[in-house]
Length: 632
Figure 1 (cartoon, rainbow, N blue to C red):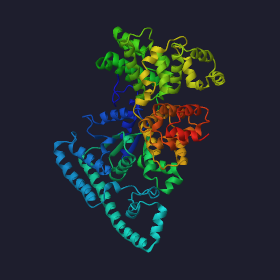
Figure 2 (cartoon, rainbow, N blue to C red):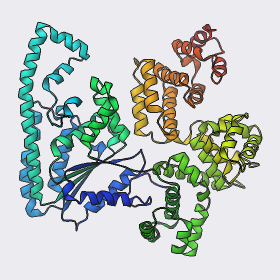
Figure 3 (cartoon, one colour):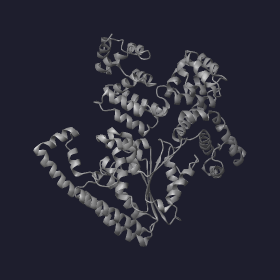
Figure 4 (cartoon, rainbow, N blue to C red):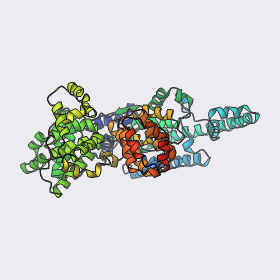
């Protein structure tokens, strides 16, 4: 088994990315700078940041001071800006790299900064309200603060049109004039306070004698939208002074979503959404660095290295890791696998590794395609694969082929609907489905476009995706293979695919939460699904379906969950009906509200959904069934 933790042990060959970042940070001419290390959930961002952290924390580096935070550190605070500033000051005071003779000086200078924070908060200027201005003003390049009057009017809780009507009254004019007067005083005080804080913070860094302060904030994308923006704005407003470098690890889609969320009532954002968001993000993060997805050779290397480490242990694996690093210096493209291990390991060690790695190379293209070159997904896949192998051994399953297991799991992971269809075929035919033989015959030794055309014209058209055809073509072939044992060890997953029990990517959870409001119209729902769901990878789409389905099963009376499924069904989103039906199978008809059943009656004529619904509501006794059957 492999732990799902960040590590500085580079099995991905990602050290080259870390070294590039280190090289940039060592260039004093680029400071101050904020770097965004961007990538999908589980893409290896944290491991790169760990390598950077270890480099700048070395005792012999007398020029650098490195502070590391997890974004979640500030999630529980009412005022994340103040929490971030407090934490950085505390780290500076206590850091082991600062000599004893300097500590008193540092603490004395830090006292003034502590007082600045306390003063701003004590004066009623809660720092979470100290923000970059409404977006249009911000693009002038200034760092002025959100006008006090704007904040106060926002507290009325009305939309802009209602606020304008209020201000047109005599009383409204008097209130606004008072707001403006007080706001000017507040803005002046805050502007001075921020400027003074930046100056004092810069003086504090100068007193440390370090050439650079490197602050790493990882997992920012796991924070709420408000916290994401507060942390980024705190860096820009208070901390972006000479000698500083901030490295942010995040999924850029989550950060963009956070910006939209913060300014969702701003008309300029609504009118020119993408440009505004991108410009704003560029103001906050000067250097975006996007991690590439793993290639096939990198996936083969990663899997081989994980298995090798597990089989020979940490101590002996150090030799392999050292050779891998040397290999990557001269060869950036080829896989590092069995042929390399054979030259490094003793015969007995190599034998153990070979027995476990031998099936991997032929399946790498499918694993890469199905898991989108995502290291976390690959590791979770391998963990499930290992558990099932052990279960097969404990259960003394005869003629059990590890390669067949891996191939079956790829289908389960990437196409849960087809995995279940194959289950139904094999259970009706004593484990050896004729359909597999038929499709393999159509797929054999043919150009893939010809195969797609032939399968689309057959009864198996849902199996005509290019990646599914490649799945059929790759060894081992499954014609004549008894699949019962493979489904027996996967029986706990037949209702829930592997991804159902895995962590939900933050970008998926963000969209789910955005879709939940009960008063959301069908038009807005369709727009969100088109703009945000459709660009998801297959893994993210499957995770969304699992999240929606699991919530519906737990909360069968929550109408909004049905609304989301209904809209996805109307939009003919692939696999929506399948997941909807699977969820409904678990729900009692008596738990469904009549209004929901009445809406579902609109799908009676749907070729994929209609027959299922008619059978589902056929009892005629419950209120839901009666409502469904009103419509003819």
